[in-house]
Figure 1 (cartoon, one colour):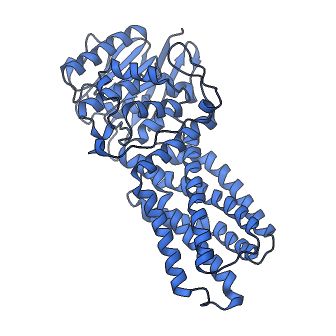
Figure 2 (cartoon, each protein chain N blue to C red; figure 1 turned 45 degrees about the vertical axis):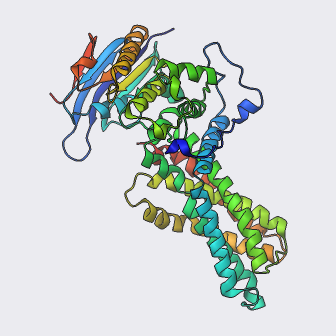
Figure 3 (tube, rainbow over the protein chains, first blue to last red; figure 1 turned 180 degrees about the vertical axis):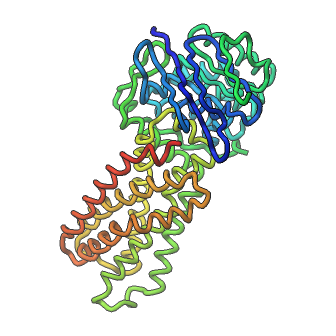
Length: 206
Length: 255
């Protein structure tokens, strides 16, 4: 399979007031890219831009598979994302949420596959429970399962350890280690313990 | 507690699953599905959500029942002169349908924003498909409202429709335009702070041509003739609304 790369060129983002970041450029192809920075430095916004969930004020992002630049659904599903702003349908169970999202994404998953994915993030015992009754840590685990739903070659994890217990942290660490060997993981966090030997570092708000 | 809720309707299968298109791959992924199946999945999700909550749909039908009852008590079957009857009843019918729709249709997008599920939806589906799925749900909801309201209105006001077939065609066509424009506007205002006010203010001028044509067509259908001219206007409106909605979906729904 061709390697998937992500390239940011001269990215800037401003809301009201001074820009969060400007002239940001990097190219990442494999391994772990750590996005560091103080609170409010734009880590979450940067990951949303990379995930095509927000537009930069200036600059561009391209996702390539080999020489081909991805667009539309292929790009959307090639980049998995989990972040603090992500939420799920509280009236539905975790498998129902993932089933719906896989159908809406055009790649429906089987019930067995969803059960396996949820078991991998430690939610095997909560298959019938509605997401509205989930704890913060359980919701965080479901976010990880969502980010991995389409087996994306690029994985964007924004503060993935929030609310997780020791087991949950181990699961996310395992996911990051496995995925960085097969593709690219971009991880944003305030906690230096979340980054184990990053291959690249992008520091915001210096 | 959510876990104490009564048994819930499950997510309906998309057409692809029904027609046997879902041959599995080894990795647990079924075949990629068509845009129609994806839009249907979004529509089915909205329907399952509304049916689980029940109160939202119940409130729309309660609103319709209250409005029809008040109108019937207010003017009654004999409170109108015969020559004005079709015009007044047609206008009242569409006012009731419009306000029932305005109560329920914007919810589709607003709830996604308010609960934070919009990010998950944006991550998996393009804006045009999301708009199509939500329009489909709103259209079916409008038809359900109309299916209850029109007979009740007709019976309580003893208002006989000369051409029921034309009236059904009118509801199908005008309801589609109403659903498309309302859904698009709901996407547009979903992130605004005064979304309810904005929705009503923006929808009034945009829906006015549709509603006026629908009222004229209803008068003609009630009189027993085929309202061909206003129906043509409505078909043209539906086409323009569909094209505009498709082209502007991304601008309305994405960041």
